[in-house]
Length: 108
Image 1 (cartoon, helix red, strand yellow):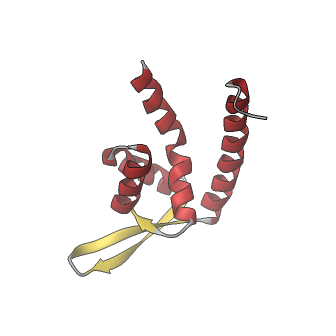
Image 2 (cartoon, rainbow, N blue to C red):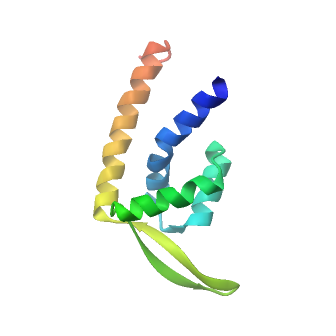
């Protein structure tokens, strides 16, 4: 049961985490997946469909950068819509997590 809850929590916050990482600078999918794996133990295979959806939703755009050790890498950067979505989601997360903390007796 606990594992199912953790998976659902991670899925629910994954887009916000990707937007947060990209708000700090452009990145390529493998790097983003690695950072998420280290921070919240999210599997690499989860990120690629999300990045495609975020691109289709115009939250991110891509560009290619030549790589000295292989094919060019596809980098992602936030669009104006992506920055706006990040700010909206970040505010919603703060409100929600604050409410949960209060219910748990850990908030103000």
